[in-house]
Length: 425
Image (cartoon, rainbow, N blue to C red; front, side):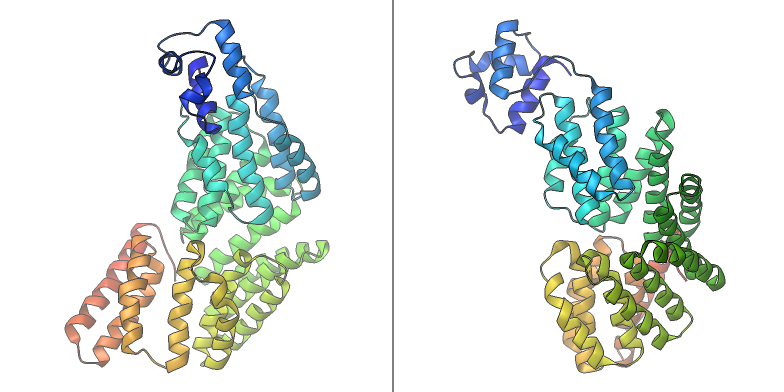
């Protein structure tokens, strides 16, 4: 990146107009020529512009700067949040004086926020500020940028985007030398997002590769994370014995560290196994135990369990308990774009619990709001669930043309699931 590009970058980051930056230093047309690399400014003008922007224009030791941020990422990876906070405070409080520093600052600040809060407050804006600097975000910086982008998409429940960003990071990992733990984290994230996209074979392959690295380096909690993913996939393909085995190994680790949130995840998946086996009451018990273990966790860590418990109450024909649970959580997902999908699910089940059957207003809601939302997001797994519900409703009301349309849509959703490698059973 040349001098002019650096000046333009920081002028935009600091929200200065060309008039404000140029005042008393040079003319606006001359500054425009500098920024567009039409002319090279004198040393004096370079220095004055750099002073006004509070930056340096000379080259920096990028390797050293990157390493400081990678050390922060390593602490986050180990879940050593106390050390990570000290590193973060030191790095973030230091003003960025070069483009490279500013980009790394925004990338790793984003990663820190997401990994410590499981939230995305301010992250989108930071990553968007650096996204257009194509000639700077290359090599190692690009690897971490794709990691951050993948995490952001993950927390926004845009799992396809999250998965694709991690695949981009994987390509860079093949070209550049990264530490083994970094490769392990990348492989784990690919396995995790593949699992959420129901790409079972890919999820098993990448998660097992990540587990091998974590076991080799004695990162036990990360090992537990991998075993949970493996359990989910084995549950999905009805290999229940292997699924339980993986969860028991993960539970041993959770008990060793007294990790209640991890236990909550394990209980959730034990509930999923019971649900797949048709043991609805046992599933309800496990999901309830999971919510209790996750009591101090943020909503994003609980939401899947809440949804699973609501569905189990519907299956067990316990509408009163379902409505009570919905009353607790409905307001927390309302009007929050991150939880819009869950809000739609909750509204559907609230109507179902209240009326005991599908009624016309609920059908209109499904057609006008639910179906378009999940269709736009290509969430075929939910469409394959809700289309037959609509088909049955219209069939029961002797509207066979509409019933046929939704049954055909259900079949189409199933085909698209398989086309995308989804093998949900």
